[in-house]
Length: 278
Image (tube, rainbow, N blue to C red; front, top):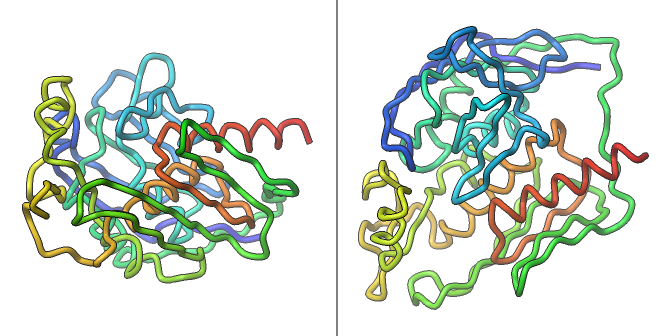
């Protein structure tokens, strides 16, 4: 069996989408079998938060992990990049409670990982696999997320908005595809009419036209888009990041429509529950 970690450290700094606070992230190589985990270096005793489904404690417009009253928020873009590029083990040191949004996509993370390079780690331990033998569905109103038995790992997503510039979009991406060019560059997006409400709710304090696409009735406020269907590609980015908390991606087809971090995590929790019973 073989796992991978980084060849050298990665450092990035930036503002958090929801907190508006600047943080520094330092990603270091980790020992074989350690998995991906966060370390709050700004707190006494540098508490560790594992990047696992069981650690999720909030899913409002991002995914938050926590342990013993210590948390780290908006982890999905970074974790998607590490998992999709094959980094099994990584120590992620952060000096605050939210991962920086950077340009709103995973492009900077993936480029940093490629620049650092990976090194193989040999192990005699069996890597637990997640077997999907029957479909699993999670739904709320007309939104749903599902996993189905398949011959390859694939992520398919659909979105539908009343705004003409977005409309109905579908995209399907296989895990063996090029994450760095097909998914990672897709930026987070928001709707113009929701911004004031979200800000009054204490969210998106660090959001701007430099790190998020914003769409209104008349179109995009900050074009051009990197893809004609950039919004739905970003939803796949979020889904990949949330499902990376399983530790290893099952060989299965993940299908989502109008879903959210909350539904993504509910699906991951149900997969883990079935795995624990097997």
